[in-house]
Image 1 (tube, rainbow, N blue to C red):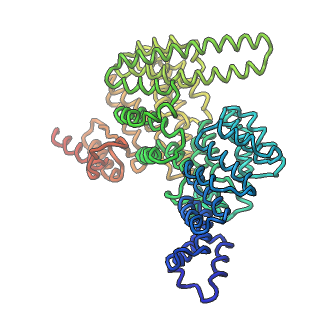
Image 2: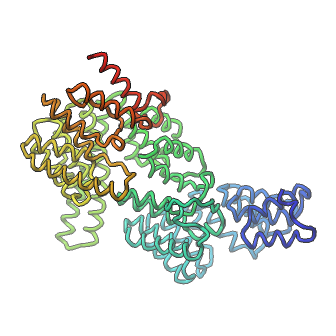
Image 3: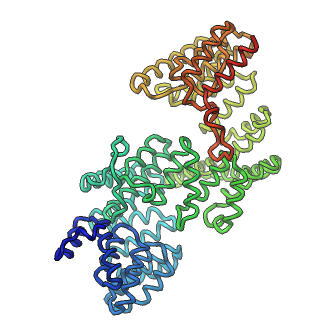
Length: 627
């Protein structure tokens, strides 16, 4: 034990030296041993409580201070520390009860602030407000607390002003800068929010290089910095989480993920609920199994980020785990009214109903769509009237509300369309989209799905080009940011409308960009041209031109060491070429899964069978038997 290493007569110096140097964990080790030998030692309990508080282990700190209040009931300082630790540990009723034991008038101001914070944590905003109003008006903390209450009420601009006033009095403080950034985020003013976040990060890096900001992103292995009070005071974790949220909103997904890896490194068990939630959400495409595990874990914690409940349900629906979504809703009825808006509940209810009764689901979605279109028409009228009156503020407000209403309408519309899409009734899907043209004709998601449904009807390729082409041209300078299937479908549409030159030009552009990526990052795998060639090859095979079609499929998988993926296609009519192709797949497909399994699948495919190598051998065996 570390305690055995402390020399006789140097006990006090050693402990205080460790605390001064913020070596709290080492101090805790020695003090814990001392407490075993002297269970009622005032010094050991007091220092242990302080050290546990500094490393954010508030429940253990509360236990230490709780014992001290029993042993030394005359010391109000311990009572105050006990109440604060309970509050920090989210034990609000116990914290409030502990504040009632503090009768010393000297602590009246502190007790009142703590009681207000407890009420705020319990979401008793009226109770919190009445206590804040009893605090000294010239105390900057009063201004901050009023700002927090205004924020909870959705009065973000007024809250921002309160925080700014407090910072003018107190000077720069990272937590206040974060509060201001959060207000701007809620007002959808991302530029000033990001500016405040950048200030927090720059100061954190400059003043605390030991927190290793950005090291993980750069691939440098660094030890955990722990959940120290210093880390908390820098507001770095909060700032990086907010930055990730903003970048995600702006669809800068790589930047959002980078913000999460840039934050000071901590072990997974040390992560706060917000970071864990954001990690789950922003890595869902890459690792859905882990994402679901994190969100399910968070739902069992108290408290958890309010968005957890709705996001878990939406992701269950996205991955078509309708039974799991229904179970979570049924088991957490008390959370439904607290965390889901009526719109969100109705949407989830319709999506879950779709599994058993698509017709009923469509009716529910149609009711939602009607409500949203009525709102959109009303807001369109408000925008027009405000423009006629040259009322810029009202125009801005109405346009923002219109955009929000449209974002609620689009998922409902797409879910309606999907019901018919799954039945291959593309004409009905097109009809649904045409009904919504007055609201959605500028929306990217709507335009993309209109393009898809025109393409699938096989006699509207020219119209499909009209929708696909603007999407591709918008991102022409960074063409690999466009979905591969969009590029493939546009190429096919060009070919089917005898615009072969345009198809070839597009493919040359994709090939050129892929070559540049391969040069810049040889390990990065890009499959855009591969998918385009596969789709074109399949088209020609379907039209009876097997020789050209199979040669195009063969080309799509070159070079084999980079492109052998989870798809196997017959390559040529020449027997030897087919065998050679399958042998290449066998050689390079040992570590490539043949099937991408669903994240929560109960019955897993045997790992030895779920490879391209195994399937190549099977196909080769089958082919040799055929000939």
